[in-house]
Amino acid sequence: MVTCLAVLLPAAVAQAAPYRDPLARTGKLAVGSCTEPAIVQGGIPRTREYLTAVLKCLDKSWSAHLARARLPFRKPAVRFYEAPEHRVCGVPWPQDAAAFYCTNRGRLVFPLTGHWIEDRTDLYPLKVAAHEYGHHVQSLTGIRARYESAVRAGKEPQAELSRRYELQADCLSGVFLGSVWRSLDRTDRDWAALLEATRASGDDADGHRGHGSGTTRARWLKRGYQTLSPSACDTWSAPSRALS
Image (cartoon, rainbow, N blue to C red):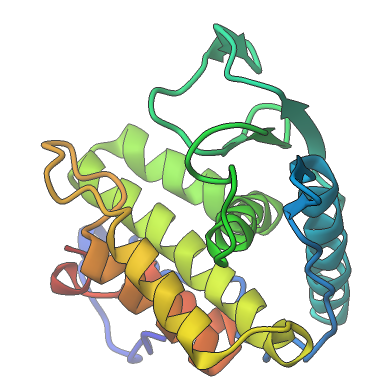
């Protein structure tokens, strides 16, 4: 948190107010319980059932947290697709997207096929769902609006603004995972495997670099997981070197 000193500044300088993270004083996400069902049962894919159960956990955790902080909450709309389509939410289906959040409709979109979820036994699908839900939290609290305003202003490279937005969602997914970890039938090896999968999901070779390197994504995920605190996910006040 940046503290303003009571000094007189020229009007052109004084007009810029410091950023105030709406999640800064909301405390820790309460420790909760979440049952993670099998994605495949008896050789039959249960991806829809898996995601539906996980989303119920996310609704419960974030609705209670935002209510305590007297911040608005509404459940996101959810759409499942057997396979990617040509258009979704009025726009072309994002290329190479595992899952995504339609900001114009407050909707979580999950394809039920693809490497991100088919036949997996690790925690990566849960992390992806929690990440996209993090974008919903950003929209509910006004963070998304600030991001879009900053993009329009053009005072900071768009790729870096995108990384601030995406890495915060990574961190918020870690907050949720940490809050329900004790209820999951998982081990330290599962957590290590998730960090490795997250490192592999970075855009290290992408010229745009809108999500962050794999190492950086894993670092912010771990930060949220260890602190359980959304305030620790304030990427907007972080230095550029923390957002590679």
